[in-house]
Image (cartoon, rainbow, N blue to C red):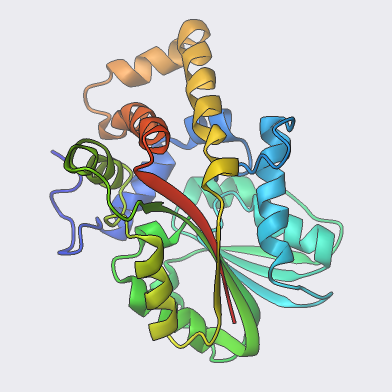
Length: 284
């Protein structure tokens, strides 16, 4: 059965389906991406993939202007890589949310020497943190999984203290993709990645304003992040040539998430053709 059969009207599958996606691909995500399951940022082009991934985390965190002891909420924290950066670099106290038991289990085994990190196995929509309880919030490639983006953004706004800052990074649709790109790239990418349909930069900016953020700055990071997918495809090819576990996963007809190997190819092509964008939104 296609796991999208039980999707909501917005196209986003239930939280349990998203959790199964990340749990079932846990080994492969960590093997291909490492602790940071997000795009890398190649500012000079000479960075290693690990340096680029950490550089992205540092770039986003710097926009939040964190101070020692600041309360940071990381929605969709993955394995906690960026949360630990926030703690170590800024002395922040981070509460991260993930729906993946495998991600929480891995993150809980890591430690920080400064600040604090707590990873909760909880759907953000159900968390209902106290109003005005956080100094800053972060959504690093997690808003794609939200069935109602506006409701999600309003909840983040409610949780932030006056003057609080919110950073969002996300992959986006180009303003005018071709019909072919929409049918064969953008729509399958969202479907296979267990995500909502991709929106444009301007559409998301308007949603942030509608949610009550007074200032929304947008930085297009498409060019310095798109090399991520060349790295992923090269790593995947090498693993297929050297590690039987990859072949077993692709050969397992019961593994619905094996399609993500094809999704990675679609994303690489979508960036190459200009059908996808990537941006950082800094909100106050």
